[in-house]
Length: 271
Image (cartoon, rainbow, N blue to C red; front, side, top):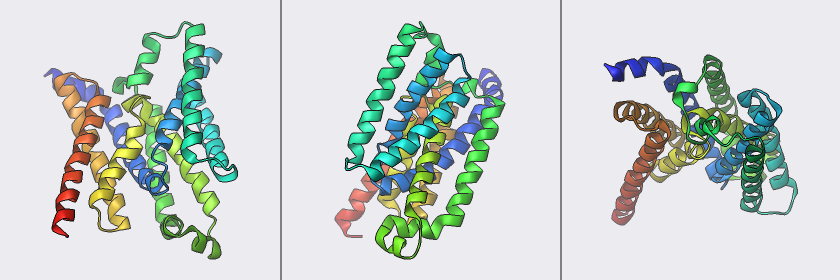
């Protein structure tokens, strides 16, 4: 009976988790193929700094962090595009800066307690109705952009020079998808926590790329693995009374290991 009551109580978190996971799965394929698998970690730890600043300024943590992370995402893409620095160096810089900023501010404001716990490790019970609607809106927007820009996206990922010759604005696409990734990571904080939110972007797409036979199939499998991990992970967390973030990401890891084994067997057989 407790399990059913808990399930009824967290339906908003379950739906928000599903919408976020599906959005992240699509964006993850794009970022992974651009060799930006660590972008999620860089943005999530930058978002930590945004949350700390919101505590300092007395502002709504989610709204402020969304705006803050949007600016950070644009700045990261600007540096990767304009400066002669490797992307992993830039991401490591923001990773370190966001964490250091958060630790200093939270220590000075005496906020290193239970208030920050739900942001670090996720708390599905704290997902609000507003965040559910926002997660749905971002999912629909991501889906619409992928549908409208699918051909351009395909060409940019596989041959950016030809894409530019055909008049495709690859820079605009890069900024757009980095911004969407930032928004989705912030929204996933309530479900997965800051420490694990980057997994929503990286793991399902990594798993799909191992066994997919086409570009389109990669997106479908990534979405399927995300959906499976979130739904089963949340049910397991309610049933065994464990944090949903841990169970969701652990299932993502298990699916990756299974796909890796399948890929290894297929490679050895020459399939």
